[in-house]
Length: 47
Image (cartoon, rainbow, N blue to C red; front, side):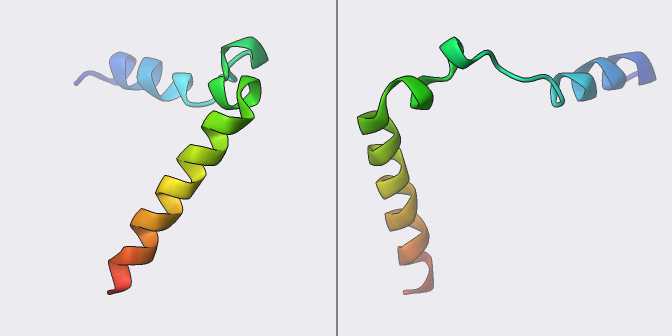
């Protein structure tokens, strides 16, 4: 990968997503479900 392409990809990491495009800020139930699933999957890792 050339340096210009690398810079282009890296610059996307610093850009913010508009609030209307963030699904978790629009739907609390979706965020809650996702958080629960994430917690369950990491909780099982130590078993």
